[in-house]
Amino acid sequence: MDGAEARATISRRRALSMAGGVLAGVAVAQTAAPAFAAAASDDADAIVVGGGLAGLVATAELAAAGRRVILLDQEPESNLGGQAFWSFGGLFFVDSDEQRLMGIKDSHELAWQDWLGTAGFDRGVDDPAGQDYWAYRWAEAYVDFAATEKRSWLYGLGVRWFPIVGWAERGGGLADGHGNSVPRFHVTWGTGPAVVEPFVNKVRAAANVTLKFRHRVDEIVRTGGAITGVRGSVLEPSTAARGKATSRTVVGDFELRAPVVIVTSGGIGGNHDLVRQNWPARLGPAPRYMVTGVPAHVDGRMLAITQQAGGRIVNPDRMWHYTEGLRNYDPIWPGHGIRILPGPSSMWFDATGKRFGAPDFPGYDTLHTLKSITASGYDYSWFVTTKKIIGKEFALSGSEQNPDLTNKNIWLLLSRIWQTPEPIQRFVDKGADFVSATTLPDLVTGMNRLTGDNLVDLTDLQRQIEARDREIENPYSKDAQVMGIRNALAYPGDTLSRTAAIHRILDPDAGPLIAVRLNILTRKSLGGLQTDLSGRVLDATGQAVPGLYAAGEVAGFGGGGAHGYRSLEGTFLGGCLFTGRQTGRAAAAATA
Image (cartoon, rainbow, N blue to C red; front, side, top):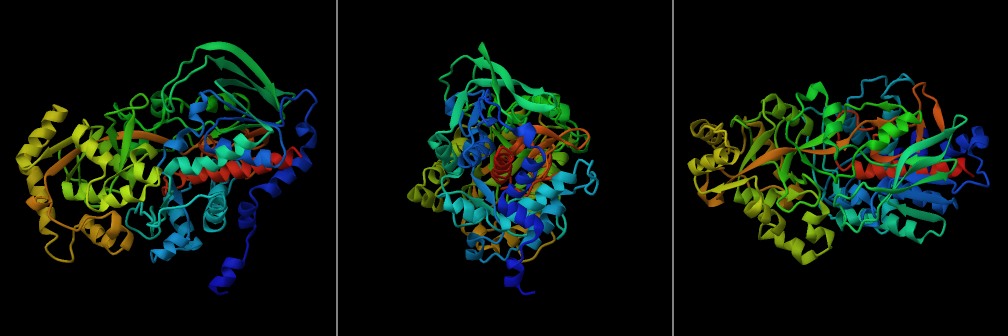
């Protein structure tokens, strides 16, 4: 079979991903029609809990199918779109037009190889009662989706992408191990807001959708074995701006009836107590200090509420937190942290000034580096870098930190060619985690002054930097990071926008020297409510709870853990899109 024939062959799982769950939903409707028959007293055909990206997509699908939907959120209307609005807008595509333009040869087979090597599924993949049984199947369906209609579906909704494809999570060094073999990180033109916008517009335009803000669900009601609605508290009105923490003062209560409830409430990253409670021993001790990469309303409370209604939580110890967090000098939410998306050239040291080895280089293996940081006995680490590297290689995650991309300002974007982007320069000038100096002795003095613990020894740090600098004198090297930089420079996308010309760290012409204290930054839950391929929430026996669905991060982006232990990046927004679409279509079919 040649390549064209292979692409034309539609497997059963690919048919499911392309049909968006309709086949599964029809099966549910046929087997469970009495439980889903809408009573005259029902307030809606479906209630969606959570106004983030997954909830918006599910609502849009239900509305398009003619269902009456109530969308609830505990936050004010200003937060519609949830965490996705604040995102960089990165999306994982396979063999996209943008990849081909950059000369990247990608394929479904290579992407699936990378996903499996990254996920490391090992909890009952072949056992219907296993934690990874449905996670594996959601992963399989999602990679099929990313390799087929994901891009064309979004393109038809008006979404576009920056033409240079980013190379995130470059992996641990083996072809069948963790990481992306090729660049797959597609930055949306307009960042997170542009991903959210089509679905906000669809939901707002739908006459059969009712939006209820400041409605906090406290209970999912189950009557006679089936879900029949929700109960909760009405919170006092709020005029808080997007992302700002809001009051939890209760001014009333509510109860709403529907034969279907879809939970799309997000993860736990804003709740450090839950993060520490679920922190896995394999990543070392939970950090004493972390910055927060999501708003305070990302609190994880709907997990326990859905569990009380019969849902099964699986893989709660799988989570995705970043190692390159900065304290935000101008915070929006409590403990607000910003992540550096680094290029490959900065040298990475632990708190004591000991250089990390492979694969703990910038942009390679997030969770391995996280484990190395916690193993050091400290909860922070250091980049030692140069102005030349920062100007070319540093990007900051978040729509608000990328006004050029978010506002679709081409001239501002082009200015990155000749100057350090203004948001990054502001962090260098104002951020509490940056130290600049013209000499290494002054840099080390500043590093020790910043932390107050005098852990970094000048002589030892200088020895390590000089050793690395000697390795760049030839076009070949035994230093794995230097080899990685040269590999990056072989990719035109990195040469154009993400990798500085290789140079000595101690070259005065590349200065000044800059040290960046890096904090652990909370972000994503990789486990969650176990769901089948229709998005139906399963109970402890593996049976679907009648009328109960989940999508997005609260469902581990599908099946309670479609990423397994680690992520390939660009897959979180995509997971919300895919699970929201699958679940919305299946629930619409089930309520026909």
